[in-house]
Amino acid sequence: MTLLAYYDWIINSLMALSFKERKKILKSANTLDLTPLKIYLEQKNDDGLITVIIPKFKNKIAVKLFSPRLKSDHFKIKLDKFGSAVWENINGKTKVEKIIKDVKKKFGDELEQEEERITKFIFQLYSQGFISFKELN
Figure 1 (cartoon, rainbow, N blue to C red):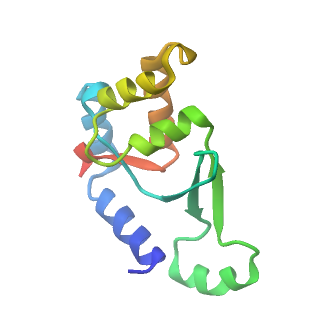
Figure 2: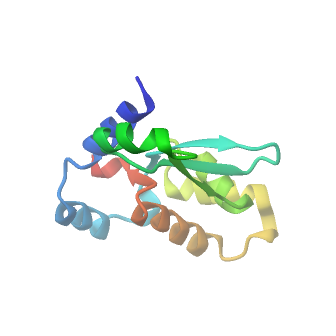
Figure 3: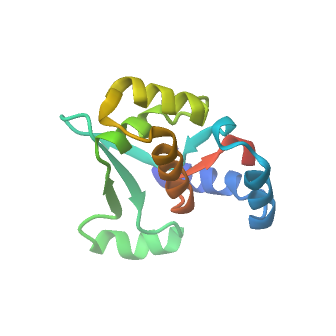
């Protein structure tokens, strides 16, 4: 499966519900019980930091027309050490509550207000379209 086909499959399977239906599910769900899953692939550098790889174009025609002319056909979003730790724990099986515990265990007192910060970060990832939630499928 090509990268573009993979992205098409992920996005189409996530868009089965309307915006209103997804919002209703998220509003009624306990944030800690949600199970995030990645939509895009990532690269890990030597320092263990994650770079999320996002295609510039999702339309097959646009990819064929513009990609050969571009320096890169992907955006690269670099995450810091806390964001990278959260991203590594997002696997479609681990609930938000467990992700918070794992990240807190890894960083200890270095990470303050971990529940609020991590849930806010996860919902930022969701609002930017980098992740979805298993409960929405």
